[in-house]
Image 1 (tube, helix red, strand yellow):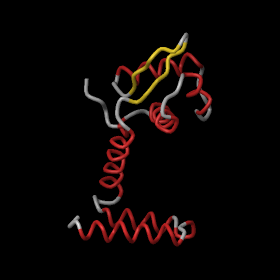
Image 2 (tube, one colour):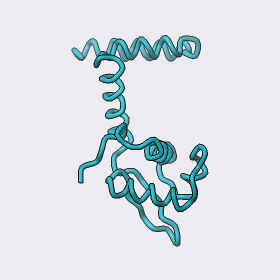
Image 3 (tube, one colour):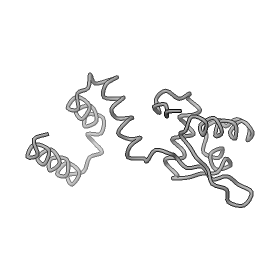
Image 4 (spheres, helix red, strand yellow):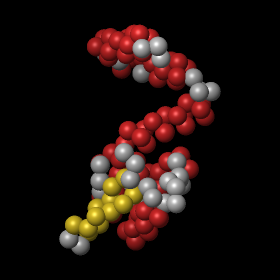
Length: 129
């Protein structure tokens, strides 16, 4: 079975995947601790099992506990999510997305971050991207 894109998961499934990506790996108890308004422990275990069936997660056993890890590396998942956001909200335009991000975070960007962004843009330009 092919892995569904992250954006096609249910809200709870996405929340669980977000937690596991953020932590790197997690037990059912750790997932439950990090979920907003968590369901029962058995419901969390059932959702983890579903995510395994959908091939988003795999587990290893450590003593009596299962430790869940994503099957898709974080970088790959990040790129897939960004492509989805670009196509859904920005008509595929990177410049529109970057402009929106800069607009949102204008006050939070340090001079060093702005210099780094300018360097990345210059580098992309030099590479013909």
